[in-house]
Amino acid sequence: MVQPDSTKKKVIIFVPEFPVLTETFIERELAKLAERGNLDLSILSLQKGSGEVSSVLKPLVRYKRLSVSDIILSLRFLFTAKRNVSTVLGILNSCGMSASRRYYTLFKGMGYALIFSSFKPDLILAHFMSESSTIAAVAATVLGVPYAISAHAKDVTVNPHCMKEKSENAAFVLICNKHAYENCIGAVDTAHSHKILLKYHGLDLAKFKSADRKSDVPLILNVGRLEEKKGQKYLLEAAKILHDDGVRFKMLIVGPGRLFGELSELIGTLELSGQVEILGGGAGLPFSETSKYYPESDVFVFPGINTDEGDADGIANVLLEAAASRLPIVATDSGSTAEFLENGISGVIVPQKDPAALAEALKKVLNDKEFAGKLAEAAYKKAASDFDIEMNVAQMEALILKEAL
Figure (cartoon, rainbow, N blue to C red):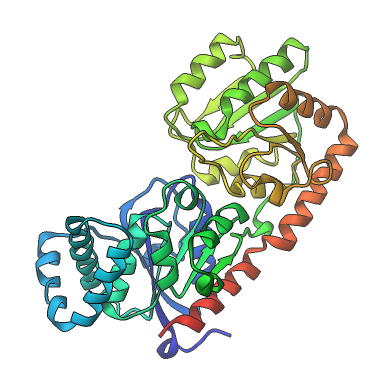
């Protein structure tokens, strides 16, 4: 039941960039939270991204960067919230920051505290375990309101910012895959580990169309940013193997990224221009366009890798989208893929950086329609049971209502 307006908790969602073309899971989650109508939501972002915004969120989003006047006016907190400011400095000191960095972060956080104060928030929820959530944590502490963090993958496993200190002082921390979750659990003292929660993002499966393939040439689909950890280089090498083995196929790669030129050149070098196409010209496509290719495809392929610096996907959102579209999936054993897919049951999982294994798995799925259908149905059932957005957002909302002032 929707609460009366006068009783709604006021929650600020702080996101560095919104909406991001390749982070549709954040927009979907916030849209569902807004649709439920039980919270008074405001979304504050530093810059506007190139993604799409649901109509329910458009009136809730504001873009704001600090101005000099914000910093100057926020200096009042040094006197009106002296004890809270002292607490902040202690937390930042525990992070190992130099004195100059501590005070830079403090003043920046106080500036945002001034901005946040106009919303009279009961809780501040910041996305990513990066510096932006440190600023949000400082602002919340200065204002004396609770804060929470929704963390994801690289921001936890490769370059977290003050993870231990922020997590231990947060109301709760939500993490969307076991690998990142275990990293965060390992960083905090045992007394605070109960605050770290594994919570998957979700999908509204009803919004995805099931496969409706009409072409007699099998279509292989890959969706993802054009960057190292997505492994498209190895996918193209696998496509070359398929081509040389006489397999009939068309492959579409959809995504933005700095490797567009390099991958386009590789397509030419491998003489695959007639079979492989990268859509979006390096800028990607909005989800409303990308989603059209799922039901038209015969198999979805995810060739991700774990990079040398430790960067890897959690449970890639595109795997859930493919499952929601009842597409059979071939994926590598990178990141948290095996947390969602079971090899031979709900997908085919092969070693990463192994084009031959990718090619062989794609052949099997394309040639065995019965096997492909069983994979697709099992993946769909897994998505429906563990990644239903109604259920997952309801749990998130309950946490917010419990912890908000």
